[in-house]
Length: 346
Ligand code: PEP
Image 1 (cartoon, rainbow, N blue to C red):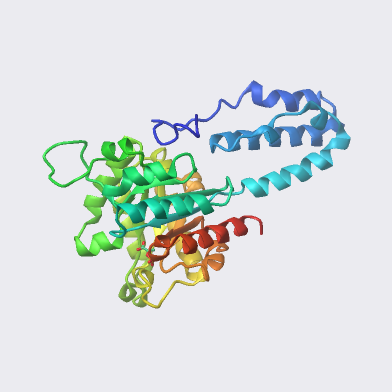
Image 2 (image 1 turned 30 degrees about the vertical axis):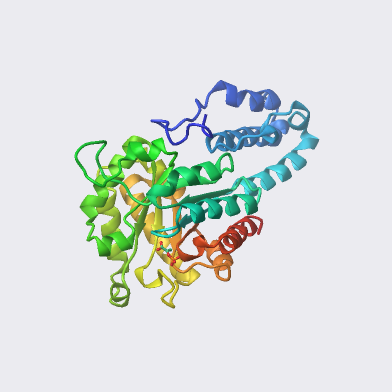
């Protein structure tokens, strides 16, 4: 259910952490202190299996196998395999491609097909593309069953009505979108979108069941005058006003410093990205609690390319990247995805 209906579930789908989860560990322990370690390993394995299922990643390897958990001798291999599984499960990596106002129908189709064709088989990567509105349907067809998700670049914060030229959250769901990009700096600047308007969109999108990628970032002048924290805080506070901690599961924050976007010659260093993602998590923790801050997916966007992707992916606390220009070239985009796959095994 978490795989198939994730974007449409009105609530998080989890477990009742009761007897069924504790039983294997209780049976192994059986009141004998010498069984403690094996019982703990079994409980940990069950917990991690549930985490995997919660994320739509459950597979046979998480099943409770009596032969591997009922003897003390089995503790070491179980623990080793748990460490391995913990590494694999540690966190998903994200690569999102914003095509902006580029491509035409034929190019959109062939770009999507080329990405599907070269996509590495790796369940720990979440890849999504954000084509222009008119090509969402053709791209959806090309992406079919590839595991690559579809996103839109904007929406209007109303379900229907007299809003000429606008697109509702329901329409995006209808054409197969899972994500919507909101608060992109180009829209903030060119269309003077305010935080208050972006916030209306965020709330409508979440209420409809779309996942939101909320873009925030400071200008060069704001950075140089030490206002970065203040700017990011203000954008988070205003952009997420009225959102509750359960809704935060559907929110991804993309940190996109304006001075680094669009190949202007500058890009943020991994150290700067690490600092800003930390500030973002701090603010989210204050607003929604520690658990939301820890599970929050934070992306970086700004001139990411195959050459600098590895450094960005290995930035502590960062979950992935939002790509502009290089998402329009399948080879470059796939090379960035591969950098994400490689980062998982480090
Ligand atoms: C963007 O505009 O969101 C972006 C990240 O662009 P680029 O990768 O081209 O800097």
